[in-house]
Length: 303
Image 1 (cartoon, rainbow, N blue to C red):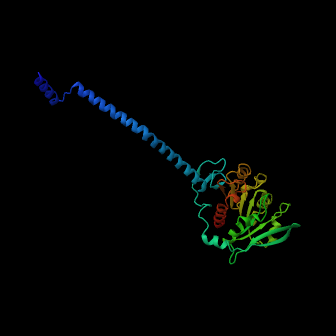
Image 2 (image 1 turned 90 degrees about the vertical axis):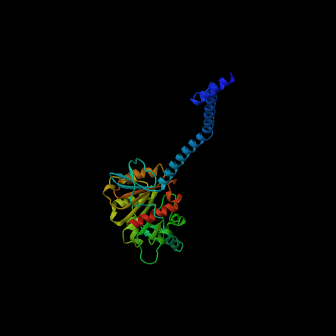
Image 3 (image 1 turned 135 degrees about the vertical axis):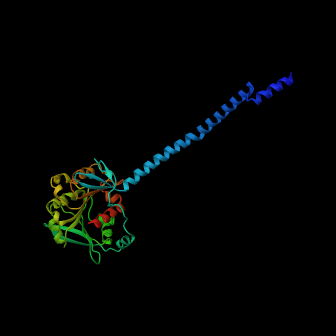
């Protein structure tokens, strides 16, 4: 009887036929492997998936942050707009061949700026006493840059953040004036400062009351224009399209009122670019002087 069972078992093994017990054992093994694989996936697979999503999120965030520094060009009916953030009402963006936030200012210019001598003086323009500060670099001068100021600032602001010194280091004569109460006086001011060639005007905030009338009335006397969220930009918007003065519109990313408001009007200037200073407020040049000076450096070099 035992021999018969063994013969039967041997025959079953020979022809690939297994007993019920062998089949049950195989099923138990497969179930065990399935359980082990499930546990491993639960412990490690979900974490890996989460890490991949986190990496994807971080990559997208980094790309977004980088896009705030690298400029893009907005093609519009009014010209090319360079932007280091996202201008309001923007649409399609493509890379612009000329950047205002790169290249960085060379080290030798920064070194020269530390030796710039600032002189002061006072002149009379339209019966107003005007105090000014200036730097005049040695050798051949490049552009003459006239620095105005906003309501809460004075000409001293441009020495505190070293804009006067940096412009001198770049080889430009730079003059910062304390603005008086009367408007429309820049045309009389410039010859009294011995400025006889077209000037680059830097005009933040309140100084728009001085610079914008000068821009629209005497564009031939301006070599370039750098408005920083100026007031009264809407009052001259009907004249902008005929003005060809090279312009770099600058405002802070957080300046949602006057910054964006002035941009909507100034973008009508056909020969303009716009730089949005990341994380900056209304006085954008105060929040990031390094980027501000880089923008000036590249803008002036483009003239």
